[in-house]
Image (cartoon, rainbow, N blue to C red; front, side):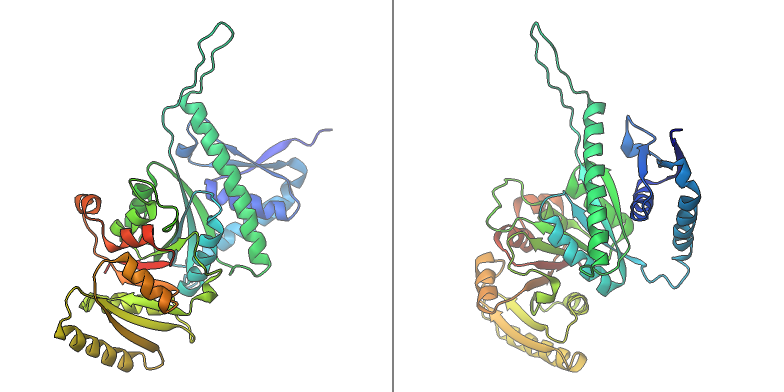
Length: 367
């Protein structure tokens, strides 16, 4: 007699994926069915189905998982913060994942992967005597969601495998899908959930021919959360390679808060901090302020190895790139000011310029 499929549970897509992964690892074949095939993004939940003969064992596994989920927030909430990793399923996702999980471990945070898809009206037709082909909006949307679900499933398995091998820290992670414009959805997510950090990939200076610019640059200039940008052509292979961090300061009081965030994030006995100030004018007060910063950090971070430099120009990607190359800087950090859309379009800030003209990772805060 054929072993029919039965519904084990109806859960959110993210929870259903986690259940499926664990059941598959335990040798229980699992199928996920969406309850809203016309508009999957509006589904309240998805159906987790298994063979009827596996039901007793599967129920026990799911009960243990959900018991852990229920008790997780009340046990001192080790993972009370989130690290957001926007993804597009490109080859660059692996690097963003490596750095995102590393920083999530440092911040005691969980990881949230956000995939934003765009579903424009799309019709293909061939008006001839033989046939007419048409792809409706709902069919196109179904294909986009199906493809994304397959990518998420494969990525989930790959991450669990890497965690089991010790290649990634054992951090809880989930996936979310949104329809819309990537930069708008990422910024909106940050406004609602205030993640401790956003880790994003960026094309860097050798692949920056688009007219509108990088999604990462847009997020950096408008996001409420700190952003760590991972260039596709950067030399570093892992977070452990971060040895020298440069912080571009304007001698603002708010910079001290931003610098403290950078020191906490890149906390390591082997990391050196370079504090640099760029100005078009060689003003005497710059030397005085730099001297004050030296005193501040020698008192508050006596074990931190620090270096200080004054540069002769502002907002110059070429000058900063030369400095970073000369001093072998691994990460450039600075505190950016959030600006309105008009200013971002007609007067791009330093974050925007550096994303499009540098292959050095950037850490940008908004204090």
